[in-house]
Amino acid sequence: MHAMSAHNPLSARLAAEAGFDAIWGSGFELSASYAVPDANILSAGLHLDMMRAIAATVDVPVIADIDTGFGNAINVSYVVPQYEAAGVSAVVMEDKTFPKDTSLRADGRQELVRVEEFQGKIEAACAARRDPDFCVIARTETLIAGLGQAEALARAAAYEAAGADAILIHSKQATPDEVLAFIAAWSGGVPLVLVPTAYPQLRERDIQALGKVGLVIYGNHAIRAAVGAMREIFARIRAEGGIHAVDAGLPTVRDIIGLQGDADMRELERRFLR
Ligand code: SPV
Ligand code: MG
Image 1 (cartoon, rainbow, N blue to C red):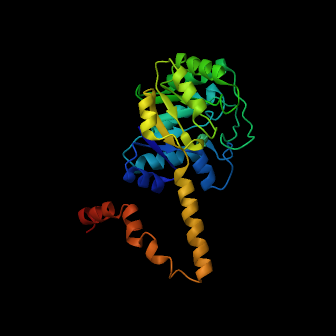
Image 2: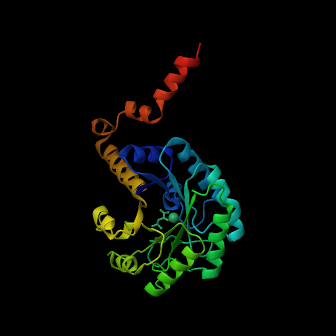
């Protein structure tokens, strides 16, 4: 299963249109779209509202990035039913301290909570869900924090024992080596989840061959694609003194109107407007 990041319903619609199996409700992307750091600067409510809007727009499952659960196990108990009610199918919760710092930044503050504390948060998330098929994915930042393979494996096993449905093993090394070593050593019963942003050379077919990975998340490619495209077009309009030269290369206005769901509204007009 492959999930593409999204920061609003439009990017989610494009990801679903491209054939991704799920949407990753990325905290990094939402933060970037508000031009603030991915460090719990935005409120939980804002992220929740965006997940609700995305879930209302696409038919594929939405996997919400709830960071550290916005506090302790008590916060998690209240937050998880809200995400479930918003139409989300799964949450990913990471074992860092609140407020978090983003994982892929060099020299970020990467402090982990105690194993027992995070087990309590996983148990709280599982107890709070109403639908037993709602997935609680535990994410360990052990490798990101530089605490090594043995600690990562011990934490992942402890999180599975606490009820996690899958384990996300995150890494920011420029090669997949430490993640591959983790996967080879993993003898747990639940599937693993990868976010290969830092090691893009690891392809889908190679991951599939490993057998233990159930979900691959492309963590920030919607916002990076958007930033790259906007930068290029804005610069060309300034350089060329108008929009004449860029127009033919852009998606048409008609295309955008289609993405807004125009066909659905026309159908409503046909049926109900008299
Ligand atoms: C996100 O997309 O918000 C993530 C993945 O949590 S990462 O930015 O790699 O930590
Ligand atoms: Mg995140």
